[in-house]
Length: 263
Image 1 (tube, rainbow, N blue to C red):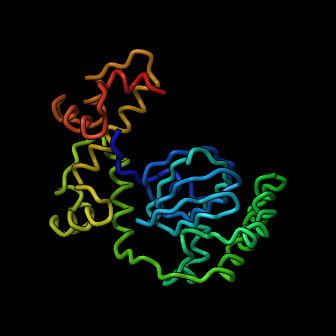
Image 2: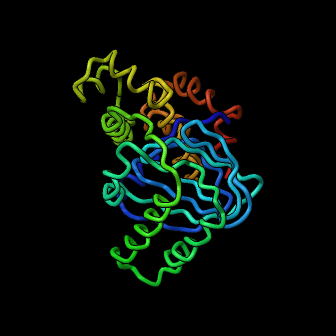
Image 3: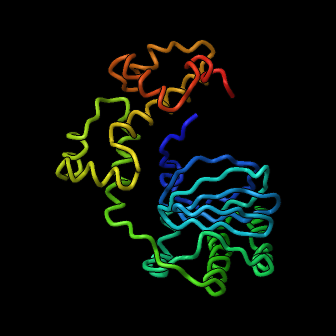
């Protein structure tokens, strides 16, 4: 299966602190407006963050800046703590991270272990107080900033427009969408808007819209005992079976019925 371009909308919409223990997550390239911190408890994971590739092992940390594209692949397995800081909380660090940020790979294991009790405290769930959670987050990020040498923030002009466009697509993908409609919606020249979208997403606007349709169609089909393909195709915004098959074949080398059955 080829990679689908992926904007992780649910984290941005939730806009809260999320903390959980993960295991062997094979995550395709995606991004969101949250800060994400992964503390590797055991095993190894291959990471790609903003085009940099590295392997992360026990007691190493992955730091993902807001809107940083990242992907994870078990090597061959791993366990981690996952801390996702929503925009409302991560904006507290906006001044700090305006021009500089932390490296993606934080590999000083001895130092990182000094922060492990704070991750464990978040994992224990002893307190539901947002202030307490925020206190642990401030301690973790404050110590990381004090210990590690900072790096320049990758430039992301107009990222807010792109995020808004992705939100719009996610809300309206079942409708007839076009470059003209999106450009008009956000008040841009369509040629400029098309270049801007392609620069950030690495995919044409129409390609991304149809990828969203494919992904959501498959998710719906997997929830149904006997999915009706043609009904799903038109319900998810495709104007013909031909258009669906053309886009489906970009990402899968199996027929839809086999993909629907796969868990």
